[in-house]
Image (tube, rainbow, N blue to C red; front, side, top):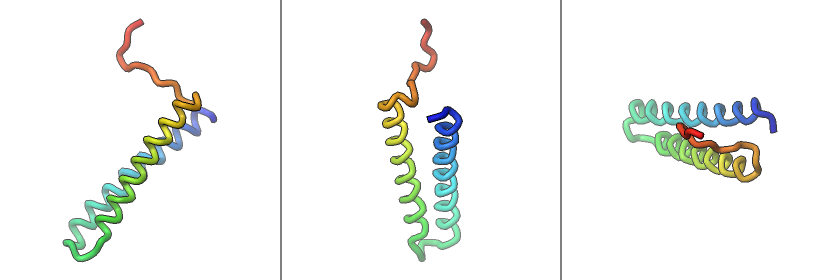
Length: 74
């Protein structure tokens, strides 16, 4: 898997997560509790977040991503 494809996939997940978070806030303010759109939007966000975490764990396991210590000195 190429580096640009991995980066694009992760950034795409993050954009969708932020989009659903914003939609949840919008529906919370507009609907005033009359519909389930807020709950549905935030549920999608949780599902996308779990999917992103699972993808990163799988990518580390398969060797597509190599984790490194942030701020580690050799």
